[in-house]
Amino acid sequence: MNIMTNPTALDVDRIRRDFPILAQTVRGKKLVFLDSAASAQKPRAVIDAMAVAMETQYANVHRGLHWMSERTTEAYEATRDAVTELMNASDRSEVVFVRNSTEAINLLAHSYGRGVLKRGQAVLISGMEHHSNIVPWQLLRDAHGIELRVAPITDAGELDMTAFESLLEDGKVGLVAITHMSNVLGSVTPAERIVSIAHAYGAKVMFDGSQAIVHRKVDVRALDCDFYCWTGHKLYGPTGIGVLWGKRDLLERMPPFLGGGDMISSVTYEQSTWAAVPHKFEAGTPAILEGIGLKAAIGYVRAIGYDIMEAHEASLVEHALSRLAGMDGIRVLGNAQQRGGVISFIVDKAHAHDVATLLDRQGIAVRAGHHCAEPLMHRFNLDSTARASFGIYTTHAEVDALVDGLVRVGEFFQ
Amino acid sequence: MTQADYFADFRDLYQEVILDHGRRPRHARRLESFDRSARGDNPMCGDRIQIWVKMSGEKIGSVGFEARGCAISVASADLLAETVQGQNKEDAKALFEAFCTLARTGTCPSCKRELMKPMKLLAPLSGVHEFPSRVKCATLAWHALIAALDGSKEVSSE
Image (cartoon, rainbow over the protein chains, first blue to last red):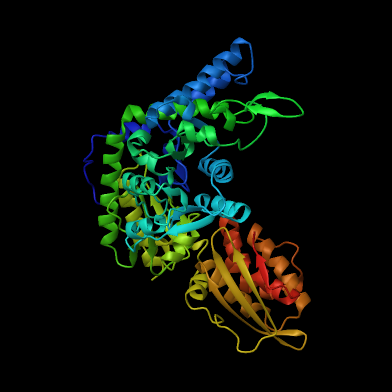
């Protein structure tokens, strides 16, 4: 095995001790978890925050007049402050809690798409979107007469900026909805340029930051984007809680998404009026415990620091790319200049599912398939790839284990 | 360490028969003339198969297929083509039921005596029962065959 000294300031051994699950064995082998882009593992801080809330301080939020409800509301709402700081938002009322990025984009497609965009306008996405940033816009297109445009990507897996701009030139695009980092290629899109070009043509911009916020600092005021969504479970937090951030004046112009309790100001049988943002978009009892867990996850990530996480992942990606490049019969998909800790690859002699199963036999967890991005697969004339993705707890030795595992797979399918 | 030992942890699912049929399928071709055809899709993983059936009277004369998928799904389609040749529709359906049980559980205690011979051919695929996400890879071709025999054009293994 190729032993490398860790060139970053991150003490990975210490980090790994924070994640109890990493001590598990799988099929009698040490777990090598390289599927964090699908969902990341949880640190003790998150597990404990949720357990402690259930054991000591839990009731429904925003409605009880009793001590437990008030304390729980404070704990839950403190997460909104943590998100506000994390994203450098100007105001906590701009942070809408949703279940995940999929729900955030559906909310936007419904409330901004139907409530603000006009028939004949267009939504512009890119050629490397997750299905969650394609299908809601197709539903909007079919129900509301909104055109759906797709900005192509290059063979390197980068957004074709010339084509992107030309798709905006007729001024019909009302909203650009685009990934900040591809879940398949790892490519990071040039967010500042996207925003400045889109704004010049009068279009608003939403970033799907599901992957990006795990790997880099997101400052929505510096980006000057209009909406930004992400999901908690990829940022070492619980499932069932995500964020849609939006500029306040835009959120205020949008009609509600789901109706019910918690989102109203008053209700009569004749009509109802809505609560102020963000509560207008938060119908029903929210994911209280998950919200409390998310605050712990944000605290955990911020204590480590994005600079250090980014440097660690960049070092892992560089190591993985250089080792994979030296292997016969393995091809990495895309080679964007700016990329995060996600690498998709093809093994010439074996289908991606067989690769994933045979790696799993060796205790190595990767994802295989179309990664909920079928149009992107078709762009590269593929049906599926295997994908290794990294987190703060990933080690260089695990990358080496992947390479050794792939050598065995290659030998087996010779 | 012998070669067999070196890959011991792979063999429970990928027996030599499967590797062989996955790599060099004998029946992976579009039939020039056929009576029935259907497409099978596994939307979760993107596997796809088109199957063609040429009848010989009441019996299945020959089966050809084009598959896009993993070694398990290609090998299963190829073994299917070998196994169902000469069977009538009812035989093929009984075998389909028995094979699905084998794929899900690893055994087929209720398999009738007359199924023993074809089931022996299919037995190398029984290892999938330990891999729940791969069972559909093995059964996709069978779903497509039954759809073709029943006159459907498409089937999903979901």
